Amino acid sequence: MNNNIKYIGINQRIPFEVLDMSIHNYIDDGIINKEYVLQHIKEFTTGENRALKSASHIIKILKRNEKLIRKFKDSLSDFTYSQISIFDRKAFSLCLFCLTYPIAYELLVAFAKGFKVQNLLNRQFILLKMGAIYGGNRSTFLAIDAIIPLLMEMDLLKREKIGIYTLSSKLISSNRFISELLVYVDIYLSDSKSILKDDLIHRPWYTYFEIPSQKFDNKSQLIKSTESAVGKGYLTIK
Image (tube, rainbow, N blue to C red; front, side, top):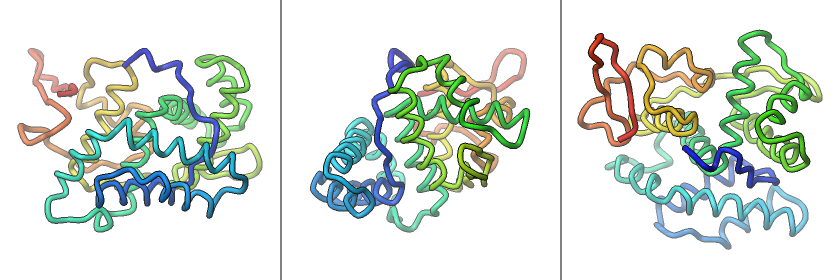
């Protein structure tokens, strides 16, 4: 990626419902309505300062990903954003979130690696793993506390009790563009030049998603599929 890998940037929780509504509004109107975002944030957040911080995070997500959002809108054709499944809307929101705040991607990867070994993970495990990447400082801890509630709202994680987490359910993507975007995010944020097709289901990122078998071809907007000399297909970003 990536000079952004050590960038944290987030310190306040973002409610999924407001992020989803803000993306929906932007797709429908083509503008980023800051007052609309702040108004809805205040329904979920107490305190003016917290609301302003949370709203600023959502505005940043929309601005950083304007091109991707426009491409997605074009791909919808005769459909509207509200007509796609809640699973796809969660996956789309998560991808934009991770592309804006890569620490969220790293947090999901850390959880996924831990869940391969055991079903329950505690907060201390995550703090140690993320501290090794970003440093064991207050900014890292604030970011983790801001991100985990969103992951639980998206049903990716479930809290068994305070400070103890387990996997919840997978997001099932049926939208072609979003399926491509999930691959795009993993290649981009893992700083990989390419990913073998056969390796997709084994990568930590895909612990959280169920993607139907998809043939990447010349209609793909984000991902290019290439066959190697030894017969192994791999995927790269266009």
